[in-house]
Length: 244
Image 1 (tube, rainbow, N blue to C red):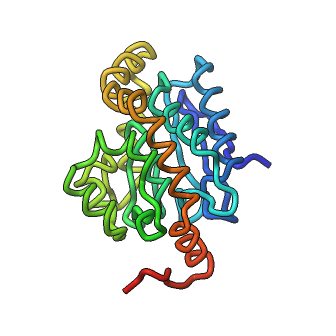
Image 2 (cartoon, rainbow, N blue to C red):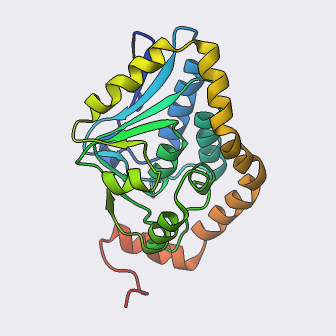
């Protein structure tokens, strides 16, 4: 069975992250399947926009630490979301962690419900939000990014909207998205593609400038002894050695 089933209704193709066994974590397989699904949407003239949703209580738990994607493949996925000539809208009704925030940040518009929570957990594992910085830092409030990158604190949907991580926080995520999807259905394909090109230019520039450096950083950190301790501690549900 696919980890990213697709459904189409009135110009909107919904791609659903459906890997409940690992809380929709970014495994090599999920990254590949999502990339293929996005490519299919790009080529399909019946698709006006993509809605990225999820099953279960977690939108995406970040990288699958037992079967992580190649950093270059993950970067290619993030860039494909940003560069897709059709808007990508995220529907979040659960938790988002680490690399999942990069996927969320690559989307053009995003709405989260009251049950959503967010955290950049990399620093607590001996890692850093390296490659996900390319779609995120051009869009995030600098002070918010500094706080949550460094501390790994969990924050809610209202704070995510305040810092620019998401577009809107709402008690009812589907109610918040209704006017967004209606607006996308009313827009022309050319109008959407060219308008998206304007608002993603600085993000794509970050990918063109920083991809090689940040892929190297990500690989180096994952291979480090400190990250090995952090990941092992996480999997064993204990504090890593450096916790004071």
